[in-house]
Length: 521
Image 1 (cartoon, rainbow, N blue to C red):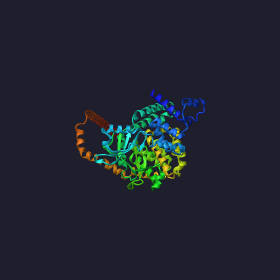
Image 2 (spheres, rainbow, N blue to C red):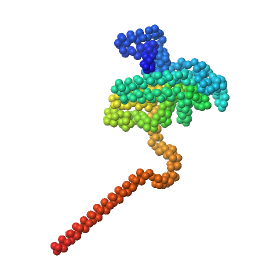
Image 3 (cartoon, rainbow, N blue to C red):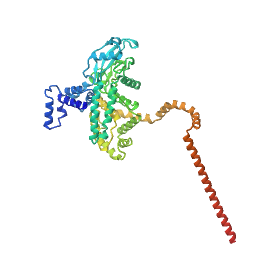
Image 4 (cartoon, rainbow, N blue to C red):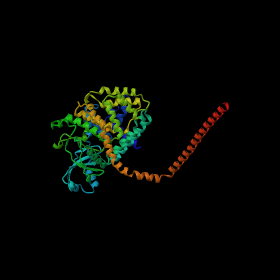
């Protein structure tokens, strides 16, 4: 029943905000339009459609807000008025009362706010779907006087997310049972992936750990800054981190006025993304403009600043190698290799003809090469690939859903910064170098060094281990060995009998021939 009520509430919000103009515009039956007007009697449609869409998503909760955040980066797909309004979802979701934030902080630390911070801005500097951020200054301890950012979780978020995910699981079950593509699309597994990542966002200690890992990974790249976590003040509901000074990356005009090289910034973004994905297999998976700034500090001027680490993606070594080979073959326009990789990985049925799949992939991808990013819609490419995948029964890989989402974020970000950026030319050298590093002698030497401590412990112990094995081998193994020896002895006796019998037979033939010749003579 909860799903029914939630579904009814979603329909009511859609109608109340006049979104039936968008959602039901393709339905010509007058009864549907009449029903929409009856249910939403008294609604006011004076506000612009983009504002109404944003307010509806905010009313429906965090999952829908995140959906709006992704759409806001796709200005090639959205009308400008809607894209501008959805961009406000990135860091301007209506905040919850500061009294609630203070109460959460005091409950988390078990002491009054004034004992923790010498200064605390009660007006949040940013407010998102899951939490909001306040600037503050620490009062005491080794961090006394340090400027920090305090992230506070929204109250009762777990209950809201559980309701929406329950409805999504129900709908995914319907899709899997009723749709011809249900099994291939794996909707329940995809929902399970989002379930995991959304619940991870509700634990700010986990987010702090994600930030610390990314900070270590990116330390030597000198392209991106990750705030340091103040671990003494990190809890499940509250996270305290180093305060960063930067300009939001979507304020391109202001960045130009400050002297930031926008073209280099766009290229650096691609490098950061591919480094996190293919070198580390651990990447920031919520890279919308609200979570990315550019440093204005003279010591780090022009570098990226990453914020909000509630959602990170991980890839196994198999996933990384498979994706890198696909990208490399794609950038070389080796569509046959792309088709072979799909078959080798089991993503398509083994009986699929390589030449047919190769031809289909070429037809999708070839028109988009040698074009600047402004002339390429990755959304259109993905849509055409999706249509092709239906024909060849390609199975959706749930573990790659976050990577696909992040790739869309990167494209939207690159489109805002430098529409003339050649995404393919920027990424190709990186991936080719990565592939060489993976299979070259340097990689082999690194693997040997990593395993050396284990070998050093094992080699001196081998004689003792072998002696112990021989002395204390299991009884069943001893019985098998005894049976084997007995069988060997029987085989030896049989061979001896055959040999002796054969020799005796030959001697008999010789004696017989001699006697016959003597008698004839």
